[in-house]
Length: 318
Image (cartoon, rainbow, N blue to C red; front, side, top):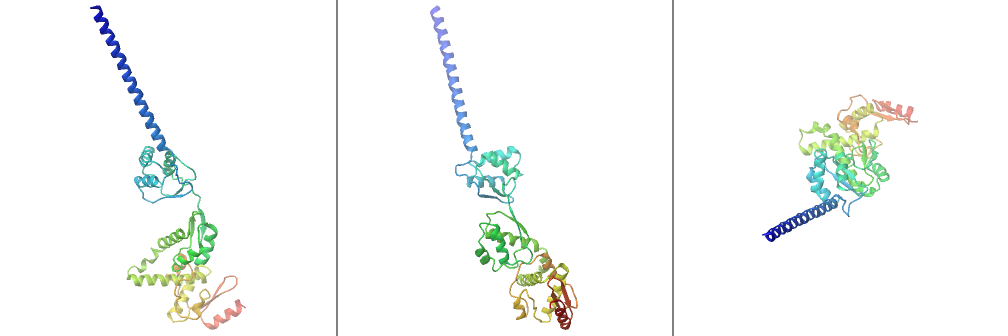
């Protein structure tokens, strides 16, 4: 009987040892899996080997979190869009993702990218470029060629050949890497944005007539921009030039030499007018004047008759 008890006790001890060994092996196995999982997550956190440093990443306005994460993954900025989305959500910035152009000058892990984009830290210093009213495409090209290293002057002039007058003069902020296509796109969009309300007065016309009215307005505005020396002059000169057109008199403006030989408007704009010149074209100031000159200091002198005009020339230009 005593031997039986000893055997049962030994069996119980063996069971406990085996049970403890099982749990130990299970725990070690679980910890090993956790370790592997952590290594996997850590690898996803790190930047991809082919991370695009120094290149432009564009986040479009209105992009969803899913669209953003998919684009980042596709363009090799992150390894896992799911992990990126989870971080953004945990940061509470799902609805605060800032659109725009980003440049990552060094490799960043997924946490760093999520933090940058959620805070709108774009890492870009833009170049301020101001295009004055009345500049033509050649004058514009000379400025852009100096400021933007990817800008091709010849391509710009070819592509802008039929866009003279429709490239809005303004202050722009470009990346040094922007090319002529980006410049043209921004300037054309700005023209549409700045003039859409102004040209609403033509909305009741059919499309062809409306387009012709707008084009004639831009042609005359480009001449006025070159001819006038101030805001008040713009409106008076606009009235004078429109009076000449009405009576079929040649415009005879120095800014467009062809107008000394041919009557009517030139075939296309001679420069790119600003809002003041466009408004002066649409809303000219009525006067009895038919002639004007500018002296060397830029002062303008008006005359009602050719005789008065000749007297002004003798007095102020000789």
